[in-house]
Image (cartoon, rainbow, N blue to C red; front, side, top):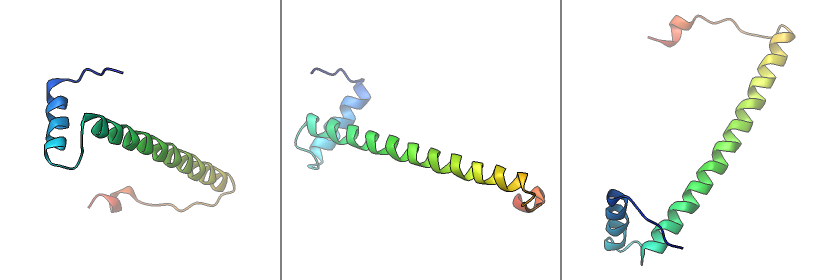
Length: 76
């Protein structure tokens, strides 16, 4: 597989190799892709958690279980 990078990304990859943290460009790109995959996984987990929290909130509101608040208290 051949990959073309924008000049600034190529400089970034070369800087990582020069730092001694990575042996070659393949290792830099592989690490970046693993990190991207992990970030997407956690993003999906966060979205699932947020949806479940919203569902709980709606259920509680329908049952009349809620707390009134004054938004001005949050923006001091």
